[in-house]
Length: 214
Ligand code: SF4
Image (cartoon, rainbow, N blue to C red; front, top):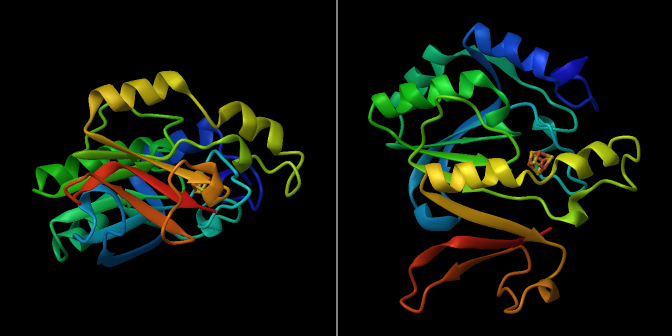
């Protein structure tokens, strides 16, 4: 069942097939305000790619990871749809960087004048990748689904951090980091909201470190 399978993790071969035909499986697309990070409050088109190499126990987008769904769309159609919306586009997932076609889509969106943010867990990358902002959410140990899916947990634990990829994304692009923690006590300064807190500089402007609670 591969990427489309209910609990299977995506394999490289399946990813190549999707990329060659310049299509991406899209779980949802919508226009909203960016809710976090340096672009907070910016009207943005969100394009959520279906398929993920990880299985976080607390994943809040299971229809793009644990039980991936969505329609296969040509990149041209996605570019056309984004052209009708705001300048900012957020390519998210799932894990968009699993797919070669995400790099192609990024090139086309930037060529069309969009400000492109890519949201990724930072475990994989693609050649030819372009983005104006890489929003990276490295997965901490509590993400591993030891209780929820013991058979998938070892692979998640092995793949959830890739320091080489993280380094390449943080040196190759403007970046921001988002960490999901288990509780407010896990961070030195507790969040003002139980779900999410944007760290701010002393001047009150958003910074590129975001802490969220699962
Ligand atoms: S990396 Fe993101 S999309 Fe994938 S399982 Fe974890 S939270 Fe869900």
